View 1 (cartoon, rainbow, N blue to C red):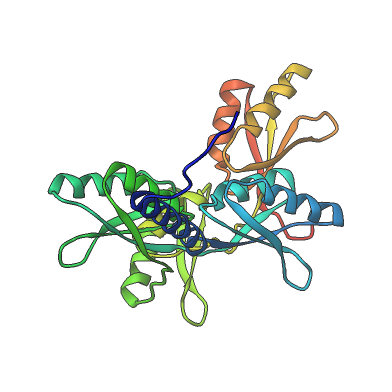
View 2: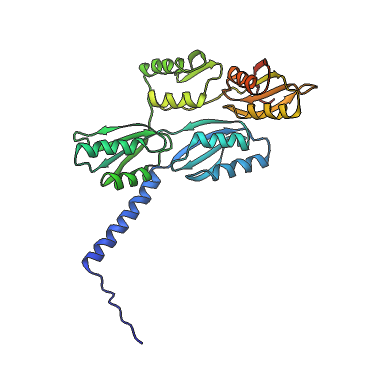
Length: 318
């Protein structure tokens, strides 16, 4: 049996194929432009820890490259699309060691979107606002045909694809880092920091006064940084002093000790829990931004009478 095929392409086929290649090239271009660099300082005490850190980073969603920086190779560099820096840092603390986010390049993404009516514009803003990592959305241009998105780890290519599906034809015009420096911004930063729960002192450090210092009890550093990004500008957590909290807890049995450790481990910001003392009647908690008073209250409710013995900063190297 003999089959014959007509291999001559029609003009419509050629046009479709050209459009498809153009679309594919555009997707690849958008991927390259939307890549982001995240630098984290990680406590790694051995070669095995360094290998573990690279593995943890490589397994995060959106990561295209991982490596080390610094003379002591104590900084993990991650490059990727739409990587959740806060979640990655949390995972790194749990699986490797103490981790500080040194820098995350906040991005300004500008997209030209086909919006034929007021309803389309509203829809475009809604779609953009729902994307992961977005801190601000708005319009640019005399005809308000450009959607501006500012955020951390926003996947520009995925956002553009969603915008095409739900609104209209979308082209990514630019993806660039955002920087804000002015006296008004400094004042705003101090105000935002002072409004955070648990803050006792705020101030500025550095020759350019580009570092905000916050001292307080149980301050949620990650939440404060997120608020600062939304209301002021690009914000990186340079350091969070880890705290060691020691509480004397009434624990009458082995089951009570297990319960106490479980309650402590479930508190926000906790990296380590354990028992101290000859009778193992002291619960030790080490973490970032742990609310000692709230934890003690929870411990009283769920375990037994609890007194906070000490709250002290954990010195590096200990």
